[in-house]
Image (cartoon, rainbow, N blue to C red; front, side, top):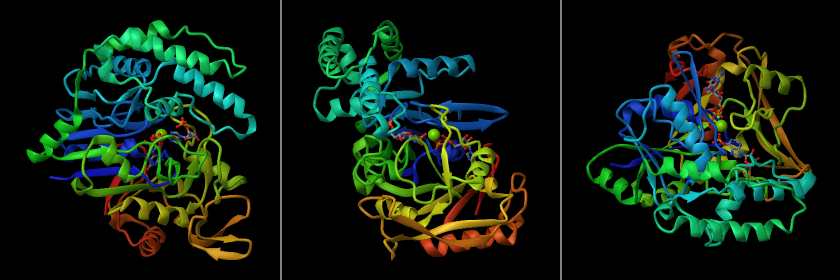
Length: 418
Ligand code: GDP
Ligand code: IMO
Ligand code: MG
């Protein structure tokens, strides 16, 4: 068997959580391979809305194993909160959630360093979720980090040593902080002890040998990738498909389908370039109808038209084999829909992502007719209005990858297989 990967093709929040939940019945195991609680993945069913941060989106389906693999950075405090809110819903995850011993831990001082660094950047801040993601990955690559497996071996000592390093770093910033969260952190470590902690790379390999099916759930999106995103306005991990290999310890040859998920338009939360951004009534309309407010931070998301230059770049980097389009219903009342098909840079047209996405990069739009139809009750492609069929045909022709699912609302049921 191979591992299928589902990942975001834009700047995050494409609806990954919903789609993983929809696809989970077809798989035995769901994994997370990068990112941490900067992610906010929303699932809706039976009038319940649930947002997951550290935990894979397979947990609402019975008898599925969920794995937090080595590439993830785990915040014990947020993890404990998530576990407790699931317990309130009657879901006990101690048996079907495993954690890699090699996943790195987010300490309270990582979060403080994140906030201090952002405050020092002033206007050029990244717009981080302030969950300590950057500082934790810095400690990982700087070879200072603490891992889940460390909680069994002189943990307090290792913790104090790293905390002291962080306190030295914090002296460089004019930033007031306290360590009130420390007690909560150690309480949360006790919660982690209740879970199976293993070398998940061996377990994943064994599952593949046994013919079990695995779905890997990406976090963030391709345009936030540390190498290929709009650097420095990116997150600190590889969000692209290659990140699934290092983030789980699997060979590239073990990857099967790559589901690329995108919104029928575009959003971005936090700072950084966004060529097709709309700062007008249409942008406001997308935000209101699409309820575009961050699942993790509540910040309003910036909205714009679909950007095919960016999308083609994402397809290339990930080797996407199937496309999933979400939030299609959000465009239901637009008379005209625009799609960026090229960039004009100082008068020259290009369909490549430039090194610097600066103010000189102007999107070139193609206009299409809107469908002016309520899609939220539509359940088969035969019911699609002609204008939507045309929109999909246009995208498939441009992107050369088939659209396999179209999502028409936040609920688990609001999905059409093409
Ligand atoms: P993720 O981070 O990729 O999992 O996405 P988020 O959960 O942060 O943001 C997606 C938002 O859109 C959530 O509020 C979802 O409930 C919602 N959503 C997902 N698919 C659809 C859709 O097809 N239509 C509408 N209207 N909302 C959707
Ligand atoms: P999901 O998985 C959207 C953005 C932040 C910021 C930048 C760096 O829900 O799609 P970080 O906290 O990682 O240092 O922030 O990345 N960002 C996201 N935007 N969805 C996410 O995750 C994001 N995770 C991080 O807003 O601009
Ligand atoms: Mg999200």
